[in-house]
Image (tube, rainbow, N blue to C red; front, side, top):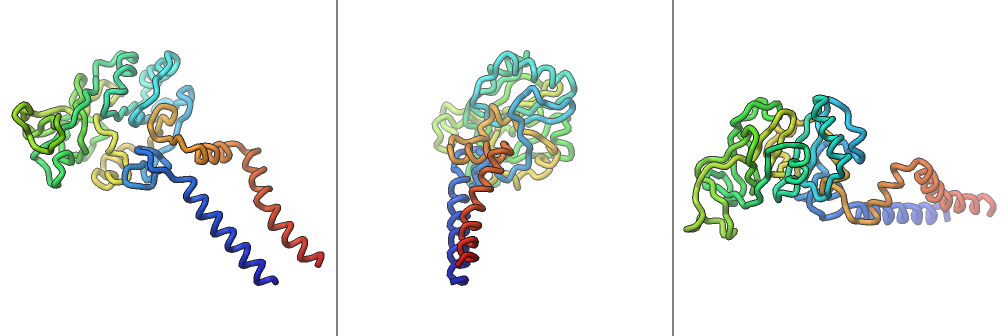
Length: 270
């Protein structure tokens, strides 16, 4: 019976581990809980859930923002920038433009589908851009590989495409009659603010493409309250709440131990 009891416990643990792994992963793009190619589970970063808790002199990343900022949050970001904090906004669809306007920046993200003949992959949307500005983020970096970035206007250019670039409006991967070649800026700065038109630089599949840039960014914290790094999965969100709540963690641990204690208690009584 002892061997059968241990076998049953082992099977329960294996089943629990499999269920936990399934319940705590997602396929949502940019999610920290997505271990696939388009997730950000491999990107080393802390998380900030309240912009009132920003530390002066640190680096904050707003990654693919999908939630509006309140007037109070905008003021927190202004104070953060004025205190020497570095703010990096990575956006490709223009969702960051209202925030940029509210903090008084002239930089804007223009949604598009930049492609280039100056590439070393079959996909024209995956190509190399040149570092043209002086910024700590790109120290020691000459080129950056991007993935269908958006154009960034205003500010001081930091990353620029070659002249063999076009906005592939019809998505056919070829320059058409109405699609003209030209250079485009995909990253620009204003003081301590940097805007990058390619949030995909931080997904798992792209991390190895620009290791020096990723290393320069460290240490960094992500604005988890507004970035698309979270999840709508209720199981994951519940487990995250349990981990952040000591009382809930203790209660769950006790519930997990009770069946094992009961099993061995019965064995001693027998």
